[in-house]
Length: 335
Image 1 (cartoon, rainbow, N blue to C red):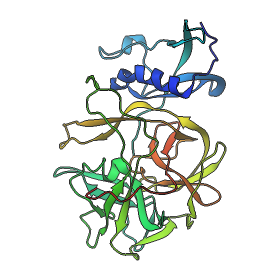
Image 2 (image 1 turned 90 degrees about the vertical axis):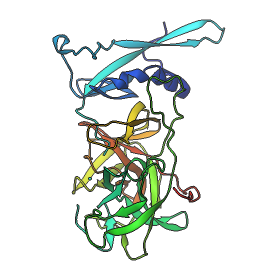
Image 3 (image 1 turned 180 degrees about the horizontal axis):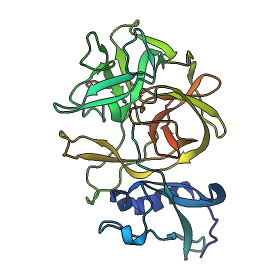
């Protein structure tokens, strides 16, 4: 048995998290990721599989669908001499409340980043999110937003983007004209391999005219200068549509990996679920949590006024951001 504090390689973490994919099917488990084990709120320095649960339960509270999590899991790998080696990895269970894959709802013109936008997902449902920023991105002036909030890889029925909602007059501000594809699966029980890992979850909006959006971020008055590189210890600010205030946090981790999680629900009714599952690596982890439901798409801005990430999800302790490449891919026809 290898020492408890031995780090796994990047590929080994992927393999280990993939082996635990069915855990996320439990409704009390919201996220399974790589991280550092904490004891008494302090990092121990030991790598761990960190399991986020909505609520820690006593044994007598366990439902038939629940199960007791083990204190460790074992990853098997070959030694240099070809023999087998078992690496024991701690399990760290933290109670974080529900994971909120994340809707200011006024109608300013021009609209700055941080305000609510909506896109019709199908005939029965509308998605609310945040216009992250409007900037010269790869030589084009584009609005940035979260893929899972405005497109779901082009699977939403409509491409029109309204601000704050389609119920208001003169609310149309642009169209979703591209997205960075997120590999997904639709059935946890299927025998198909897991989807490829994603580092990004963003789409872009071509505005109806250049005067409809402002390059500033709401409340802060900051005009982002472009895309920058995140770094551990950086302080970032974010303004999300649901939170409606300026929030600050510190980047604590750059290599967060989620394992499979529920990415977007394509169900057409309140009681109908049709989940797409995805898995992410290279997540930017910040503490404290700085987002609420409806904040997805908000951008993390560092002290140099660079955008270093896009808000993706939060729980009660942490927030998570995905990466934004410095240049967008080509526009995708009929995205």
